[in-house]
Amino acid sequence: MSAERIAAGAAVGGAVAVQLGAAIGATIFPLVGPGGVTAVRQAVAAIALLAVARPRLRGLTWRAVRPALLLGVVLVTMNLALYGAVERIGLGLAVTLEFLGPLAVALLGARRRLDLVCAIMAGIGVALLTGTVPGLDPVGILLALTAAASWAAYILLSQRAGRTLPGVQGTAIASLVAAVITSPLLVVALVGLDPSQLLPVAVVGLAAGILSSALPYSIDLIVLRRVPRQLFSVLQSVHPAAAAVAGLLVLGQALGAWQVVGLVLITAGNVVAVSRATPVPADSPRRMVAEA
Image (cartoon, rainbow, N blue to C red; front, side, top):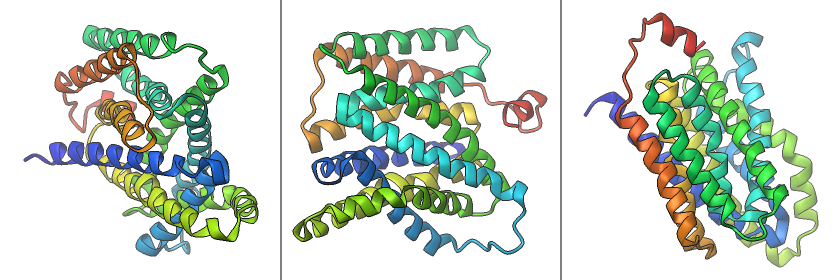
């Protein structure tokens, strides 16, 4: 099995972990809200990743660490926006809209008619997912689109952080930055809890932090060193399907028939894009410019 296929399989596994962790984290919305869940996730991820990566801060240059610092800010924006959207419009729909971010990254690097067809399929799928839901919350849609833009930035910055820092140090530093930024939310969430609620929040937070942050962020950073950014972006098409299944199994959030059709169109369009992707040589000027 080629290294690229192994990396692709790892990316899919990371996507499943993300959505399972997101669904688990959403179960404590009534206790700490979306902001509290995000803060707990980031704190757990930072502790776990710093223990594993043990980044050596001495000797780091600003140029090397800057992508990781920016990545930390993006992580906060992406997770707060996504959980806010999940609270309003459900996990499956929120993640499907969020996927427009990776889709945009993939299409911006594409130059073929087939990619346009895939984009149209995805657009129809999104229309079915959003246009057939009665009383759809516009704030939830806006939050999901904010998460989409953040996801696109996450892909670009993860790739850069992986090039400037060894191992998973980039992810560890980014998680530390995100944990510091969200620490006030963590304090507010914990202070407002009844003592009997601390244990369930801690257990759920630990699971969500490992599954949705520490594990997949590390996988993504490593995978982006081995596959083209465009292919990685298209592989993220598994997220909406994983979110729909996780939302159904963990949260009981079922999609209607038209939403399922929309989900299938989005996923199918991007599977086609992956299967027909033409590898670009590492020394190609086009690839060097696309990944700069």
